[in-house]
Length: 151
Image (cartoon, rainbow, N blue to C red):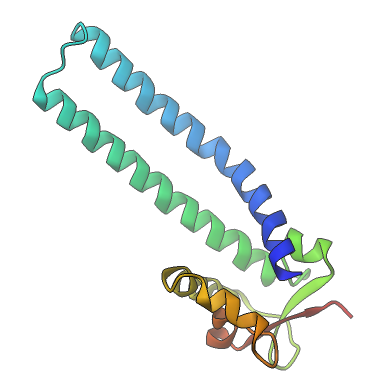
């Protein structure tokens, strides 16, 4: 059920991110096209290096912005009165601390920063949820949280 909630959330997140990524890529593409047109298609080595540097900078800025937006989405939703994201709400799940209380923003943020560790260890931290007694993923253990059925 957690995976299904995750899929629903990422559909929402990726649709929202399109409003950020597409304009940035459009601006970078227009800039590249104008440079190529101005030079008659014969770009110098310096122009090519500048274009690549611009592309890397734009991609890095987009990646950082997207990461911050995802952290905010998950942390704000999980610390709200709903105690879960749209995906979790759709499937009747909530996020609590180990005592069953609502998370504050800091605890929700720690939980979601812990997901980064799971990504870096080949998603093993997420898979752990299927094999632990309380169905906790690594980020749940780090933040002392649980994902449970809504009462």
